[in-house]
Image 1: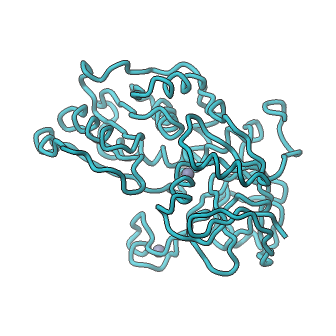
Image 2 (image 1 turned 30 degrees about the horizontal axis):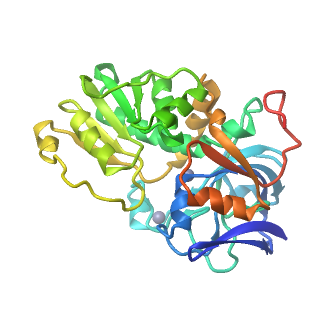
Length: 350
Ligand SMILES: [Zn+2]
Ligand SMILES: [Zn+2]
């Protein structure tokens, strides 16, 4: 039996779920709470049922058929992060080696009837064949490692800039939105040596963001010139409009924040896309291949993203989890499934 939080038709339930005897499993340590989890509870991402949670840090607990797992070679007791998506390998997109599988399974998102297990707001997480695990460096805290999934997504956004632009010609890069996603994109851009600026209209969010360390903040966008790339992590019509206005001729705009339908802009200067010959790209999920580099970014960055955690909610406290998911908050929460006695060498004892 494993305690778990199950999402079903707009509600979360605390339940004991039977383990289904899968040969490989994790003991979940903790899971970062993501904006997508808010969308799930608000019924913007389907009806379930499934165990919610996808920004997992866990410890390999059972490993009877390691050949079914991909990613790093692991042993029982290893601390790992999980790439939440699994591609089928058989659909047209998979065969043509496109990025998106039509039958993609994602832990914490994809419903499957019986059993209703899947994501990581749970004590244990049974691993399906094809799951990719990545070992967490010993010196990295659980909290820092909790950013691996969102950082892998951020690295994907940065790749879209480097795909489209020659790094040596790249001017300024502006990240709109100073929440956890924006800060991950900012951190990744810094890692790649970009001249990156962070902007947010919310002063409180900006002040909070400075917890992670010194940031290059754009006080105003009015006078800014030579912006080659703008990444909208705010996900609002206003921010996207600003991004299109801000990008320089030949620039690139990346939409990183609008994962579900939102209010459309009252007016949108679409002609600027022609006038400035802009490239517009979106990103909708994490590419598995970016997990190793994401862990490297987290290991090498001086920015302390773990300072963004404002709440540590035990898995048992369903009401607190629901409350947190129902109202917007600055910062980020983490759901603690099991206290981790095995780590950490000095860095983050609790
Ligand atoms: Zn997420
Ligand atoms: Zn496929």
